[in-house]
Image 1 (tube, rainbow, N blue to C red):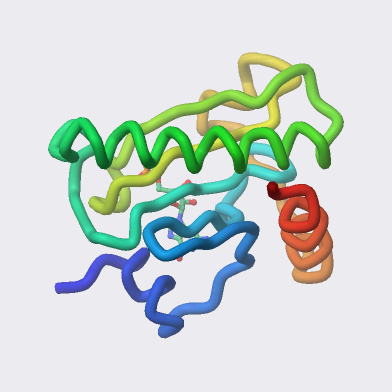
Image 2 (cartoon, protein in one colour):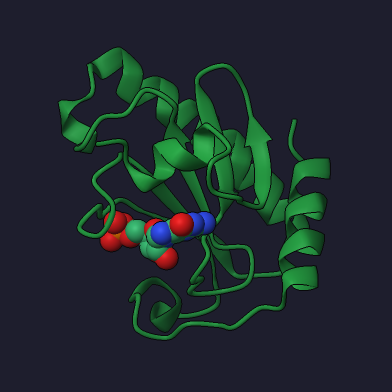
Length: 130
Ligand code: 5GP
């Protein structure tokens, strides 16, 4: 069965996209730890990060680097943190999270954003993506 992220790639489930190319998609996490919390996924569905070929792994990190730079330009924060978990959604994804403290990377404290806030954040990050 297709993962929920494959459904996002196929447009069956809506998302707030921030960057996309032939192989990768970046979009806002729907239940963010912090404003600007973004997920970067390969379009080719794979369960675990370290099941990727080394080439695919490095390529995913390369795309994530560019997305992180766009987040840094957009969201005032101490730094952008990166985490890979995958216990909820078995489709490789890199979490990129604007951090102002440890609690922002612990997946316990969540922020609630309105639809217009998601749209505005996604647009601003997308405009800073190079
Ligand atoms: P993990 O698998 O790394 O533990 O967490 C999966 C992440 O995906 C969570 O942060 C969760 O909020 C996010 N997520 C789950 N379903 C959706 C969805 O349908 N849309 C978006 N944008 N994010 C989702």
